[in-house]
Image (tube, rainbow, N blue to C red; front, side, top):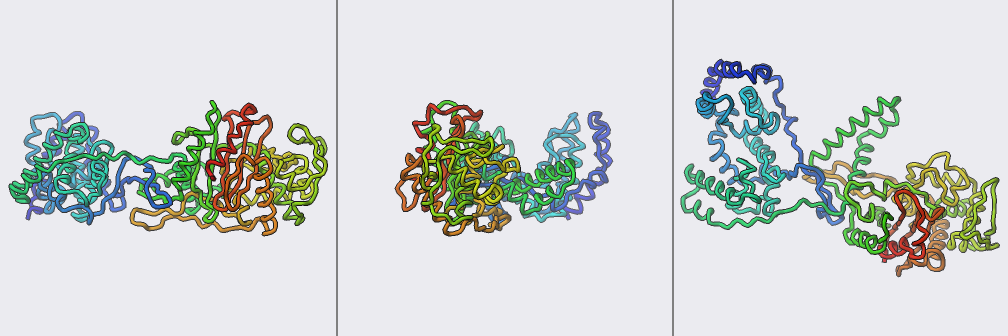
Length: 616
């Protein structure tokens, strides 16, 4: 009966609405008729709202919240009935009867507003408030108010009352950047919504009426007054007895403010970058880019992909990662302890040998979130750290040579290319094992020449070296001379092939799910055999000897197996230590952002000590 009466009353007053609209000069250009408003009518697929996306560590514990606004979604069955009763009693007593608007409330508001040039009282239902928050903003004009009615009616046609209440309680603002009642519960009390008592529920339900005035942090007393007023209304409407209301008012409210979780920025930023790669691969954007024929087509694909990523992140996802907090903290501590030189930067990556997952990552000595990330964005010359991948591995794979095979370590030229050993020294004939462990350059060049540039680079091309190009196919590459170089992540990733001869790209993300646990994205990288068992065993033996007796001895750790290869570039611009134990593979790089010599710190061996601190 109320529904029919409401329709008759509102539409009989429609000319009155139009009179008000056209009599207001400021609104004359904004007027939308009934048909115009309905053309913007809502549909069910428009009810998605921005939710906070989360990153969790290997144990499933939250370590970073990605996007703003801060909103954790509460399903209808998880919202206490007491909250709904408070809202209906205080905001919209006819909520379960009307069709989106309350005719009586509209008339009362009209009568009050007739004497004003702008709206003073709104008479808005919960559904109208939802429409305003979803589509219209907070501007108070007659035109906007009329459009709000039409939107509210369309929402009522599309959703049940329970769905409207659920959406409303998840979208409204609770001050301090907090949206949604579940978020408010966790922000103000550090409890899930279902854990709050009725006094606490009434307290947070008091906030949205005026989030500035009823900000519990800045205006606790005002919020408490509003809470008690709501309890009085509950008593007046018969939802509480006088005794129950009095007891709830007497319950002490103790705020326990929850700060935004934002830990391990180095790792979180990389995981977000990897998420883009994962979505691009699994939704076909990479293939579209490969097929694009013009810069304009590529730009359109990039723009579409950016929009898609916003949708994914704003939908409220959980990015499950392999972060090991202990190793991450050890890594950060190592840089803070060992790299106390002005201007020198660094990066490290640690990968679990069994899972091939990235468990720790340092993006800079004092990395600030979203700044330049040296672990995956810095491309530097690798020096001798490339030799196991480009020289010794391919040579042994091709010839099945023993590491006891002897090779000439005297000066050697190929055409005009004449590299020298450290200090210009010549060593005569040495074993391949010695040449490797002492990082001699001329033996590496000789072996590289024997295996051949094409065969050597055929092995290197199996890894994910983004900036590798044909111009790099030169003899200088045998000792680390490249056009652009490699990132620390790429180098560490490639070294995992010396675990067992197989290669699978190292990932930080194990899976991506929605809030309900449904898997949305997951890597499915195949393993590829790079080295035979014999080659793997021989390279591992040389890596171990390098740690025990060679240039890597300052990185020595106690482990069932441990081995490293070092790298120093021309003029001491870069220091590398790459290696593995029986459990982990770790790479460390240090250098200035704008390359300059670090010869003065060579004797300190900071890259070795950082690697040791992480792996010990």
